[in-house]
Structures are given as C-alpha cells and as structure tokens.
Amino acid sequence: MPAANTDENGYSTVVGLIYVFNLIVGTGALTLPAAFAESGWALGLCLIIMLAFMSYLTATFVIEAMAAANAIIHWRRQRRVKRRAETPGGALASSSGSSPRGSVGDASPSSEELRLLEPDPVSLNEYYNITETVEMGKMASFFFSKWGVNVFYVMIALYLYGDLAIYAAAVAKSLRDVGCTYVPVNHTCNASIPLTERCWADLELTRWDAYRIFLSTFVVVLGSFVFFNVQKTKYLQILTTLMRWGAFGLMVVLALRKLAAADRPLGRPAVARVAGLPTLFGVCVYSFMCHHSLPSLITPITNKRRLSGLLAADYLLILGFYLLLAFTGIFAFPSIYDLYTLNFVPDDCDGHYTGWFERVLDYFLTLFPVFTLSTNFPIIAITLRNNLQTLCLTEGRRHGLFIRRLLFPVLALLPPSIVALVFQDLQMLVGVTGSYAGSGIQYVVPALLVLYSRRTTLTLIGMGVRNKHSSVFQHTGWIVFVLLWAAVCVVFVTVNHLQDWFGL
Image (cartoon, rainbow, N blue to C red; front, side, top):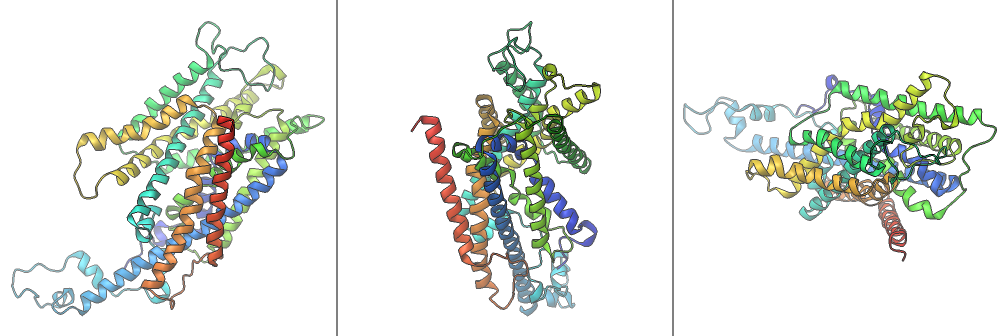
C-alpha cells in the first residue's frame, strides 16, 4: 500500500506548524483588542489562557482520531488483501497465470488488483501511521451514526455561514471608513462617527448606506466565484501570508510607538468586567479555531514523532502573540473599534503624521482586511456550497444543473449576505459564531471523535496495537471535562445574550 504522502510532496514539522500558526492567526485576532477592552485586561488574560489550553487539548484529540481513522483504513486494506490471497481462484490465481474463469479471453488483473497483490508494508506497529488525509467529515462517517454525521455537517455549515458574514462585514466596514470623507464638525479623535452621518459632503448617502453599497458590491463581485470551481494558488497563499505578517507586525509596532510617545497609557481598560465575558469567549474560541483544517495540514508532515510537543509550543507562541496584540492595543488607544485595523484609519485630528510614509502605512493597515479576506471569501463560499450539497443531496444520484450550479451557490451566499446587511457589529458576529458553531467544532466534535474512535479501534484492532499519536490527555475524564465545559459555556453565553437582547 503506497503512502498517500511521501517525502517528495510532504514538508517538515516546522513548516507544518507554521501553516497551523498562519491558519489560527486570522480574522479573529483583529477583534481581540476590543473584546479585551470590554471584558477587562485581567479577566481577558485568564480566559484566553484557559481557552488556549482547551483548544490545544481538543487539537490533540483530533490528531488521535486522525491516526485511528488511518488505522481503520490500513486494517480494512490488509483484510481485503488477505481475503483475495486466501480465496481459491481469486486475484492471486489470476496473477500467477491460471484463468479463474477457464476462458482464454479473460482480462489480466487490473491495476487495483495488482496494487492489492503487492506485499503490504503496513505492519501492526504502523497501523496508526498518519499517511492519508482523512478530513473531519470522513472521520465522522467512520465513527458516528448517520444522524451524527448530519449534525456535524450542520455545525460546519453554520460555522462557514458565520465566517462569510464576518468576512463580508469586515471588508465593507473597512472600505466605508476609508472611502467616506465627510467628518462632522463636532467629531473628536478616537470616536466613531455615527452611521446616520453623511458619507460624502455633497451626497445624501449616510455611512450606513455606504456600508450596504460596499457590501453588496463585494458580495456580487467575489461571490460570483462560488458558481464555479476556484482553488487558492500557492503564490496567493504566500502573498496573503506576507501581508498578514506585515500588517500584524505594523499594528504592534505602531501601538508600541504610540505608548512610548505618550507620558502615560492612553487607554484605561477595566481590570474585570463580567458583562464582556460572553463576547470575549466567542472571540477567543473563534481566534483559536483550526481543528476542521488540521487533517490537511498535519498529514503531509514527514516526521510526526514530536508532534504534540511542537504543537504545544505553537500554541504558546500564538497565545503570546495574541496577548501582545491585545495589550498594546487596549493601552495605546482610548477606545478600540470592533475591527482593530479601523483604529489606524488615516485621521489628522491628533496631528500625529510626520510624512507621507506613515499615511501609506495606515492606509495599508485599514485596507488589510480587504486584501486578505477577499482572497479567502470565494474559497470559503465554495467549501460551504460543497458541504451543503453533501448534507442535502443523495450520494450517487444525478441532480440537475439548476440544483448544483444555481440553487446551492445561492444558498451559500444569500444568508450570510443578509446577516451582514442587517448587522455590522463584528464583535457580535464573531462572538456568536465562536460561541455556538465554533464551540461545537472545537470542543464537542473532537471529544466525541476521540471517544468513539477509541471504541471502534478497540473492537476492530484490539488492545495489542498502540496508537502512537494518542493524546497526552488519555483519561476519559478529559473528554467528559471538555463536553461539560462546552455545555456550561454555551449556557452561560446564551443567558447573557438573552439578557442583553431582550432585557430578561
């Protein structure tokens, strides 16, 4: 059985963890400073440390489940080879020259049969080698019932819907705040301009109208790609990665410069504010999300011996970066926008410009979400479309062009566009997406996957073969703890949201 990922198309452990780092540090990080300012720096510090640990814990669950899924694939293939070898007149007899059908015109063994007849290199100790990419949907089909698989795809769809709404709102807000030139006479520095104010002095359009115009244009232009098949190229990945690191580095440097130039911190965040905890929880969960993409990133790593330890180091690095970004932001600015890049909108009201170069940097930071999120939006929309088709369409049945090429692309684009048109509060969108769909994918699904994968492999393979990629959190109590944590957090967030929205 040839490995699915050889050294030629794989990469080193360090490169794989850089990919995980880039995957985690994304849009959620841009909403962290505002969430910290709302909940208080001490409370934010404690919660983000706890959620970083929980995310790492469940990431080890996903890796263990990946290894278990590979073990089942290897076990099934080995059984198939043995059955063919032991069956009289089977493929083995055919390959040795005797005709199992007794006729001269029998076809020679197919390439699949020849592949199965090769000596199988997978020994018992190699059953749990992660050599084939098994996405979470396929793992769910291995270990869950049909009902459980459907629930999983519903969670993924809801999360991707939230992703698309967040991306669309972030791009539209960035374009509006750069494009709108009218500033009210009574406007003060570091204060957001009301949405009812004009966008341009000579037009009656308000900032809210401009937001919806930019949003509609963005969805029409970028959303059109969902009707086709588009794949992100290697060079586009490199470009967006460089832009991401340039932007995040600039935000930290400019915030530190602002702090150094001031006699005292300009921001005075509270120590703790319980009212901001639900939003911070959702933002933090969203900011550490990577579990649904781990199989495609981890499998090509050629050396997986120290995977858990290096992944822990990766999480510590990400946690340190998030704290640096959040703390510099909350102490450098008196008030923080829900999208942190909007704090760098070029504004001469505080007289901080010394030349054109600083203005160019601020324009780059403000438009950073437009550049990076625009490249990801079609990919996520196509992924959502494919997941909706998997959830709703019957496998093996032919469906018309209208359903595949029109109905499901529209179903992927329309709901998040409507949500973004109605709500422009990114903190709320990120908080709700992270608290509900994010909690399901990051906590509930990995915990159940590892629970049922252990039961399945114990039944099929037995206890004699050890899973070399087992989570360091082996006790079943950890699974129970994760599920209870998710349930308590979701209930707490729901109660607080109901109190805020309905005054209960």
